[in-house]
Image 1 (cartoon, rainbow, N blue to C red):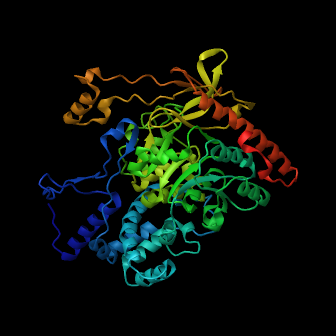
Image 2 (spheres, rainbow, N blue to C red; image 1 turned 180 degrees about the vertical axis):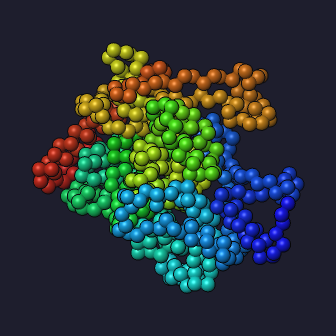
Image 3 (tube, rainbow, N blue to C red; image 1 turned 90 degrees about the horizontal axis):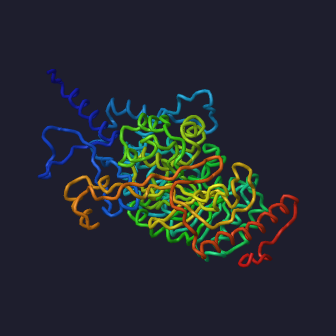
Length: 558
């Protein structure tokens, strides 16, 4: 075998291997005695742990470890190979007003995912340096810029952040000054003029029926998106509401927001450390604050909900994700998308992220919703923003969970089939009780059936009865599960029931147990209709130019 004798060549080869480990998230697998394997076998490592019981209620994404940045990595940056690799990683940078519509090749998600993982190692390396500086954050950032003149890894971090997330550097030099502003927990909504009536009903149902005291921030994209009159109405209609223009916090010349894409950026811009995004047409049957205590959210810092099971045998989405990321967490192989059972995985009507612990995952999600990333790639592969949350976390390898129940239905019985429930998409809590739904209050808004639903029934979308052996990968673990269940053999484990099936055009679900809402749940759901009627009348009056005061309404008794 050829062995290079030149020390320089040996050094360059060694540095290239080191950088490869950083970029692809591999490191040496320790042997049982704690020492590194002598055969230099490279294995991806997943050190993130969650309680075993969590797998019974949530589908958990255990990411690969991204090795920490080291002094050897910094030395590598000043080599010829390091210079070449930096150039490659920074080459996708595009200008603020550059039009890439005729240059789709400029957006390469395979290169993007490698750059994001390297950025993650750098962020975790540079942030403690920033914390150790004195003075206000603005002065700390200026001091960091001075250090970048002599510290190549800091210089690389700042340049890479500007390339990946240019909308962050809007009156700030680094992401750190934004990251350090977060505190508390609260709800985030997004609304323009077209969503005004929906968001009024959703927020009033939370404030006046569920009596939730969580602070609320409503984000928009300027006065042309949400009129000043509507901003005032929303601000005054209940306590604890802020109305905020996201383009005053992040640089919209890069984002060029529109439609769904505002959602992750609003979560990023929000002042809340623990942020729950809620769609304008989402409604709760429990106080949303209970979700912050969800064991899956507590364990990982990111909680997502499943969409309905629809459109099987779609190969495009899983093939794309596998092609752009050499590393995937433990979740994709168990997903419906990868098993070709559904083209949809996530419903983004409610999303919880702890930005103190999962800030980098949210940044990666935002990146997939940038102007050219979404127009040229992500929104072509997926239907809008929904899948960009969990796939963003995949690209940068951050942990997350899905609530283990697929999108179900809430509403009324189908007239020609009492074993089928029709209405809006329902989501359950980890105990299997109705929690929230999205899609509004109408029978089937997508088909133009704009009469109010009579809320009385619900049906689960399935996904609850996973085989216990799927979550126990060793004999001892299986013994513990069997002991917990009082069983003697894995043959006695309950079989997974067949999931219910959707009639998509009719928005009806059949094939599972028809459940009756509790009286409290019926009162809440049907009571929201009274609020919605007021909101719609006011919405029409505002379109006619009238000035309204929402405080004149008796929202509690609507």
